[in-house]
Length: 497
Image 1: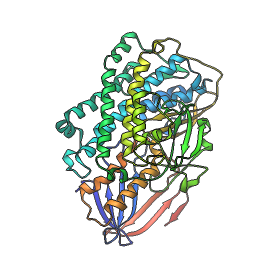
Image 2: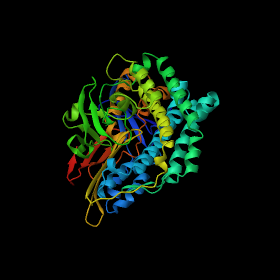
Image 3: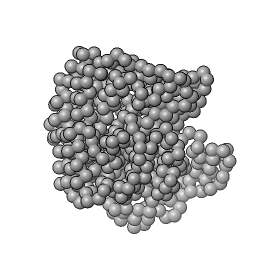
Image 4: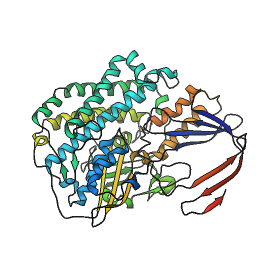
């Protein structure tokens, strides 16, 4: 059994199973199940129990610190926060992101492709491939990258080297693989030298080949386990992400497109600077992570998914040839307009790795990445909004400053937050379909984690509901029975529940 598995009785004669922590994700979370006397699942919740509060940390800081400061949200996706913050402070110095100098824009895009490649490779090969290669209920000693390297050495080594290459792209541009500096207000602080460009070109063809091989691998794994892989943790949802003006897949800068589960367009090419008119957030008492939803559809129907599955579903095409061919095969997997299989997110993720590898080659052969027109500036503004497609999905950074250039307000909607409701629904589906009525064992409970890992959640980035969470005090007797409960709300009012 899990060392982190807890069981307790509740007042309703239900048994609570707690999986704590959820493993092989970035950050800390837990899952609770409420079971009746017949082991039937009555309730399932994914709780995010760590608190970060970065929205408050950055208030009072000068805006030019933000691209470096917000990287500390995460060691896995720091570049995504770096660039989202940079796009926001571009506007504070009077420059719209679409109007940056061409060399700065292409360097940022190259940096971002390296980030998406390394993050996707880390997630698939290190965190998820053990489940996919050995089985969801395999022995716990096999659920790690070391076991993959031992039994599938070629696959394991390719995954490690794909990630390393993406990190080298980051290092050449920002000086460090993690928490470097590159983007500044209005542009970039350096371009690539010819030696740096040539160094990255040496291995790019091999990276493209390995990326194509990884797409073939996940297609084989997925399609050899049908209909199980199509049905596992699968939910119907809305989908949201950035899109190019021509409808192509976009990771760095574009308008927002949202579609419903039938593939019908909800909004298209929506200006992300007006995101507050599109998306609202709900707070719930049992988690530090918010629940975003599309305002036009309401809380019950307006939740949505972001990330690789959403992006590949939403786009009309991918503008690199190998990834586009892979997208066409992916979409042909279903007769519906949208692919809803949660496990197909891995397939979409590796299609994006291939797209990144192809795009990196194109940019490395573009002389503009060695150009020196890197910074622009206009008339000062007091509000900036930066949005980017992070590996896990659409990432929003919104800042307001005062006349002294000090941040007075910050709002972040990170990708994992947008997937919060979807993750809860997927966990609920797995619990009801595969766990309910069975004697729960450690290998069986790993099914819950498999469902969560498909979303590649970064729970550390996603926890920031400071000032809005009620404080709860529960008094239990020795048998776990609730004797009394007090709730202190954010307005200071105390309620006896």
